[in-house]
Image 1 (cartoon, rainbow, N blue to C red):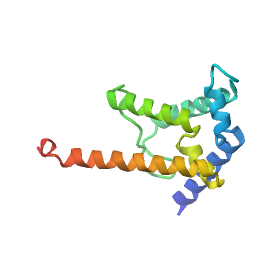
Image 2 (image 1 turned 120 degrees about the vertical axis):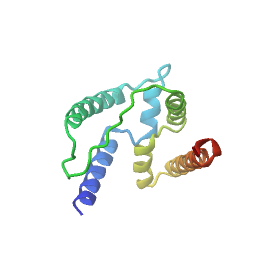
Image 3 (image 1 turned 90 degrees about the vertical axis):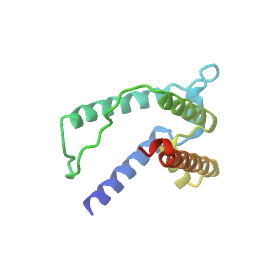
Image 4 (image 1 turned 30 degrees about the horizontal axis):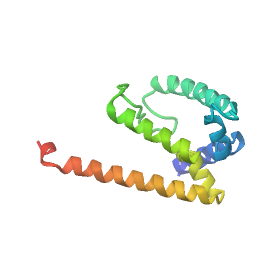
Length: 146
């Protein structure tokens, strides 16, 4: 029960931060991405703050084997820049630039009743579903059954 409460609290805090910072507003995000037009650098400061907080948190997490709630720490163990990472990053950037949403702010905007967010989240879930189908087929292929 503690994990559920902690997750709910973290999600609410994250969502509130996205709303206050303007990240849930696609116009603000697109203004940040529009370097040739009316560029709005304010989200750069939001990102810099988020990166600083995350860097400190990850530095501390690397020294731990258990989370504060008693779960095993599961941090990424690869730092390779491979084809899948590059393709995923490009697709993420295209989606972010077209819609003005990334997954977290898209879900927050959906909760705020924005129709554009409904389309975005639907497309995001479709993409996740297609990825899962491809991954399952790869796992089930005879080449991987060794």
